[in-house]
Length: 309
Image (cartoon, rainbow, N blue to C red; front, side):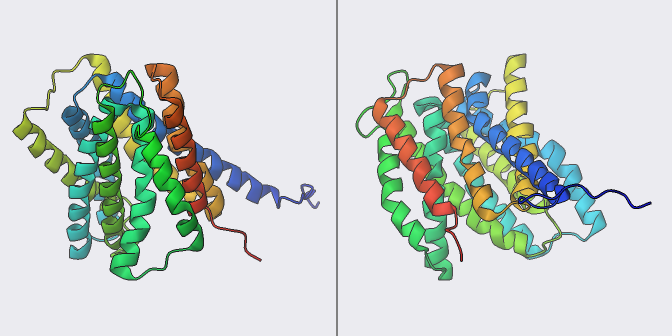
């Protein structure tokens, strides 16, 4: 006897809709974890150096066995992947050091929005070094992004509860530049062998841990004598905001249309702003909220593909 066929709908077959729904839910969860990371760091009560180091070191706990599994299943990473992965980690370590300090100086929401400058810097790097063309949408969004970042950083007014808003704005922007450099270098690392999914990020995370550890020891800023809740918050950053979110975002983003995935990724700064206000009592100035809105809107324009015939 023939099984009845589920009714069709304009949205496509039931199996396709179910797969899209699963991918969307996975991507949303990954973005929310990333957006919550800045709040978790501040709740940990750790210094910037300590939080940055433990974020990398604890993330290696799941990354290391996954990398070994990849090497056993496919092959050891080629030299090109190792070189670019470790080099990318140097920039990732600098990003984590500056971004973590920016969170403590300017606030979780402000710092997370400021790091969005990587959306501008990465295409400019690709243009300058690889000759990639800049889209019209990117050129339209660029001045709006710059204005938004200026207002977010406190150009007109800043959060009265932030201890060092100007320094935090500078460090948050510089962290975004370093993150764009990390993205640029990790791309050839990944291209060296597409079968190795976790290895490039794992190598970069290990390299970042060494960089942050050395800088932290030289500055005397690493303090491992944390309260139990501090360790729990930082473990949540490392395992949820870095290792797990990497898997979730990777799974969801490749299974959704690029425009839809890019729009969902905007949940990261939005979640950081909301959680910073609700859980940390942050009070960005009105002009900073305007700047955040402009920045997020510019990111949406720059990253979401236009309609195609």
